[in-house]
Every structure is written in structure tokens, then in C-alpha cells.
Image (cartoon, rainbow, N blue to C red; front, side, top):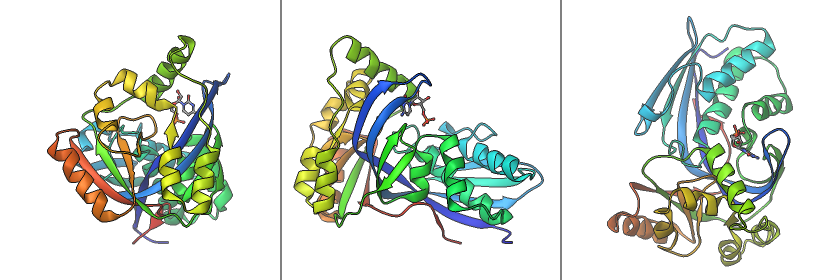
Length: 295
Ligand code: C5P
């Protein structure tokens, strides 16, 4: 068995996020098109005397460095299900914005599952690991898989979407984060007040991806949580109107711009910073693969 596993785990954006009714279990029924983007957290796992979490990177102070961290919960879950002690040191190097709607915590959890599985040689199947991922959070199974996928249920039921589309994503990182449950609650409130419409259609985005048609993808990309995120963070409206093909990523407050190529993406990132519309701007290729062991 290895004595150290190094992984990288990608951020995601939702190219389409259609939010249906609130279910009895507190989740909303979704249809969403996930896309993994090339902005990564690095996750290192090593055997230790107890479960330890260490966090580094720009946003590290905003991440819990204890057993409540989703990556630590991933290790605990795998340990409990395979009859082991969860004695692992998990080091997270954050490259993905924290509480930004890019599923950074889910990416870390997915990497921790794969890393601990490799460290311990549990012999679980990919399907079994994926089922554990779904217990940890709605976005964790997608982080394992990466690429582009249609997520249904609460987002955990995945169907890969084959696409030849290759593009760049500019992520405009906002000050502070947004709480995912708070954004979903705000959407429910807006809908009850008649201030937010019916669930968006994901079919145009799926069709654009299958055709590799970037203009159609940009035109069809839509996120039902956007109205709620903007309602809670009105400053996002200026960011969204800075360039075409902009949408809030997940529950926000990160805004994603879909751009044809890297040069145009770099230029847009510079412009967003110049105009002080975000605290940082990252350019990432899309789509990319899921969690990967890199050392
Ligand atoms: O599954 P995850 O822990 O990422 O979900 C965080 C919160 O987001 C949930 O507790 C719920 O409030 C909200 N959510 C939802 N419907 C979904 C996914 C998440 O309401 N499909």
C-alpha cells in the first residue's frame, strides 16, 4: 500500500441548473448540467496517529480544519464502512474558491474518498465509492467523475454527456461566500412571492453540448439559483452584465463566463479586475476530468 497519495480535484460550474420542487427530505429536485473546470484543489493523504486536517491556500482561513471538514467526513465514512480507524492526515491546498458555488468542499471530499481508498486498498468498486460520495453531498459524485454530466435527483444521479465542445471559463471570485441552503430558501421565497419563474429547461444546453455549438451553449446556459443569489448579493448584477455568456456558478457568488478561447478569457479576466468587479479572476479550461491521483 502507498504511504502517501496526492490527488487533484477539479472545481465545477453548472452550465444549466433547473431547480424543481422542494422535496420532503429538504432537498430540491434538480436537473443540472455539471461541467468540471481546470481549477484544482490539491489533496494529500498520509497515514497518521489520528485524523488530522490541514488547510493551506488563499482562502484557508475560511475552511474548517477539523473533523467537520467534508474531506474528514469522507475519510470517516469510508473507515466506518470498511472497519478501519480513520487515522489519516489530510492536507488540502485550496485553489478552488471557498463557499463560491464551485463545489470546492465536494471536490475535497471526493479526493479524500479516492485517496483513503488507495491508501487502505479497500477493494470497493467504483459504484460503491460513488454511493458513499452521494451520502456526503449532492455534488460529490460528480467531482469523482468530472467531464460533463446531467445530474438529476438532488444532483447525485449522473449520466455522462458526450461533447466535443472545448472552451474556457472565467471565474469572477466575489468577496465572501454564500450559504447554499440560504440561496435555495431564497429561491423558494421568490417563487412563493411570484418573483421567480418556473424551472429552466436544460435541453438546449444538452443539445448545444452534443453539437459542440458554443454560441448555442452560451445562449442556453441558465441557472435558477441566479435570481436568488442576486437577491442576496445585489452587487452580482454588475458582474453578470460585464460580458455575455455569464451565469452564477451553482449557488454563487462566483460568476462564470463561457468564452471561446484562452486569449479572450485572459483579456476578460484582466478587464474584470481592472473594473474592480471581483476580488480575483481565474481562467480555466473546460471540460476536464474528475479526481485524479497525481502522485
Ligand atoms: O447536498 P449538499 O450538502 O451539497 O446540499 C447543501 C444544501 O443545499 C442542502 O442542505 C439543501 O438545503 C440545499 N440543496 C437543495 N437541493 C439540492 C441540493 C442542495 O435544496 N438538490
